[in-house]
Length: 236
Image (cartoon, rainbow, N blue to C red):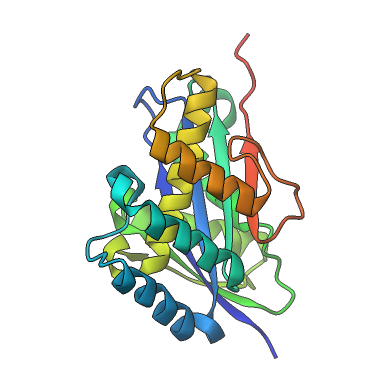
């Protein structure tokens, strides 16, 4: 029997000229057979902590640290998986030589490398992308085209669709993990001396649970919590 999975993709610091040295794109992978139960447990945790607004890293609240840590515990005991592509030193990107002069082409490549480890082997996938972080149908069409060409018309990625992040908990979990990864990486790269203590406390908790430093890549074969570390070449 083929397995079916949904991917919820979010991005952080993805704009080309935002003067932020890192970018991250990642997903939460959800087995469709477990979807209802996973959503139920997630909602129970939110209700327990009286969390009614959308969960986002840029709205990190010191008073909500217990909630954030409980969601980390929930993730690591569940069947969910997380993977991201972390791009460091974004200012080094050379779109002229490597991406046909387009930041969008670079985005398509990173989405491809993000999803590529999910090989066919009979499984089927649906991919949902936060509509607030994209440039419309053309981007979805191009990503779908890339995988159709890769699999010669027999792509296991059956659907690419926009959704609003506030409509699904798994977007919000992806946003929170990606936010933590980019924050820790910025602290390290820019040698920030006084990072927010509560954010760093949460990051340390996530690192302990995952077994990895968030600013570093994980082992390539890691499936539960995978970080692909991408660094563009230094411009000569």
